[in-house]
Length: 429
Ligand code: PMP
Image 1 (cartoon, protein in one colour):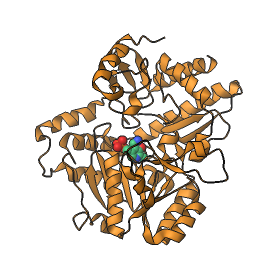
Image 2 (cartoon, protein in one colour; image 1 turned 60 degrees about the horizontal axis):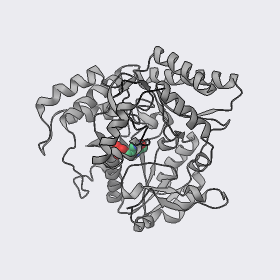
Image 3 (spheres, rainbow, N blue to C red; image 1 turned 120 degrees about the vertical axis):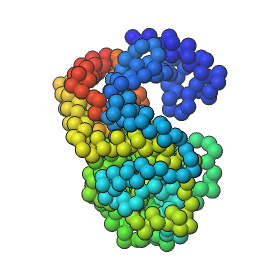
């Protein structure tokens, strides 16, 4: 239904100058379907052909208050005269660090960086520096960023035989096989398997790195008893717990997934929702660990704590802390799930939701997956087809049931009604 003439023409030009015509492989949706954004406002975005969409991707989460939020953007503009980078600190760093500490009790101290990848890299380095150990544990299905240490996954081709563990392979080429010697990867939501690894190998393991909700598997959540067990096992075996809240931080609760589950990390990372889309991330953690920065553990970065991003973070965090924005986002997510359930139940279509209301996945099976393995083995054909129709109708959801649907404070009643009406239509197509 949509006219994509301008996006298609632009793609032909873009691909002459950039691989796949984009700056992230995931933005390439095929030669005829790769679209380019003109602008956004609140929960909506417009492509260069003028097509309007209600956006449930939000850049994979950051635009928690909605695109181009007036207060956040004004704060960033006001910070422009501070300048950009000086290889020196500025005053606002402390203001934002205090806000993070107030919202996330596990943060005795805070360091800033620019992206999720950078923050997790720095957190793992810190854990190794503090413990004097090199190895680490990750969970199947996690995504922690682009660096070599975490670009590993259970081989989907190896999963059909459920009696043995799948091989662990790299996400694509260019990642040295040597890195494989440094980590264990265990199934998600399986505390026993984690304990087996820690019991035997804790002397060499610096940290367990966990995403409290698997953001790249449509939002598979930790079972509460699992993440609590991870906390207890880390303490028992003298291994640090790094909670990667790049996606969940300042989204699923003011204090992130740590508040939601009632746990505290030794080190955690936050990024996306922290500054409504401006590039900034942070590492927080226990004082004696964090003080290793400056006592042997290297950390830095030309662009860390850049003034405009800091100002955007201050504005965003202040709103999230002092208003009901996150409650309203969760209520919208719940209302959307309820509305979808009604449509699907009426037609006898089995379905389930994963994740948290603010970042939830939709499955066309009665039981939602609880591990990467059963997520990978589920059939997404119906979802993928329906998502294609929805996007064509102006509901910008994840096209391939990989990422959850993200909600922002900009999603209002009009968005909800329009989404549910279009959802009903797409289900019937
Ligand atoms: N950790 C998690 C949990 C993430 O969701 C992501 C991004 N999807 C990253 C790390 C990497 O963040 P970035 O893309 O900003 O490098």
